[in-house]
Amino acid sequence: MLKLRTSNVSAGVLCVVLGLMAVLAPRVFAQDQTADSETAAELVEDGLDALSDHAEDSGRRLLARVISEFPGSVEAARAKRALAALDRGESTPEERAAIKAGIAERAAEFRRAFLLDVGDRVFFAENSAILGGRARSIVERQARWLTVRPDLTVLVIGRADDSVGRSAAEILSLQRAQVVRDRLIAAGIAEARIEVKAAGSADRLAVCDDPMCQAQNRNAEVFIKEWHFDGNWPKSAMSGASAKGSVSPVNVRRADPADSVSQ
Image (cartoon, rainbow, N blue to C red; front, side):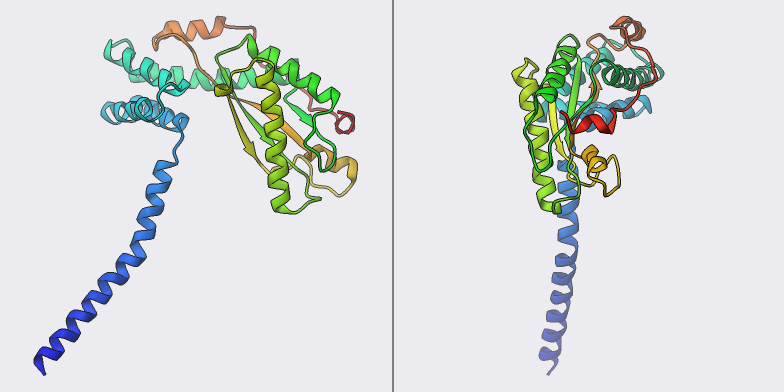
């Protein structure tokens, strides 16, 4: 009888342990997936943040991970420069923080100039991912603008209106982003500088029912993602950034919705 009770208790404990493992394992797996899903750009930013916060060991590990996991990428080159400058003792956490803030500000200035000079998006006909003549012309001007600024990377965001289902909108928005990317590559922009994103109908410019108004949501936007300076970390890099190009804050106007259907 005692053996039977002991066996029952052991079986109960084993069931509890297995139950806990079943509950915790998916969470651990999900956390591992989240950690693994970090992009090279995110790891670089985390590394630079750590260096700016005086957490040098953590910053070094993150930057070394970028170099190891994303060899040959723009971010890996950026991480190597940061580590080299750190090894030479050429920067302080305060200088790194200032440079990081300057990079973000510089990227914002390029976005404004890009919008003013050539426009940041093209529009599509309903249920179409084909570039019209005007849209092709805009993408080619975008490519020429980006060609003379090789230190910029871009994100092409495709969008769709809500006249189609959610799944169809995802597919259509991806096709629109891809066709713009392909046109940029054909015009001479390196594929490594371009990422694509399908926003579907979730990121609409206008919430409305009128067909002319809805046309604003059938677009692909070329978004200036990052500016990668090619110097070292000291203040000279910041002064070099100021001298690079003629970009200054400007007031700009979004494309007239009435123009969208003619592209």
